[in-house]
Image (cartoon, rainbow, N blue to C red):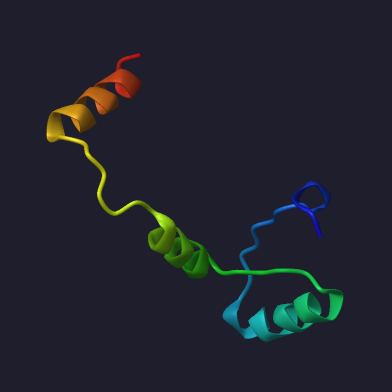
Length: 67
């Protein structure tokens, strides 16, 4: 499936029903991931050495907050 053919959906379901949802996901060939899996993937792919000073960060915060 391409990204243009899919719809992202976030569901809150009881943990007891997770196995049933996973069965449907597998049966239909869909993709699923938990919030924890998404966070872990983000943490693995984020840059580790960003050349920003504390002043640079505060300037960005001020620009967004007081824009």
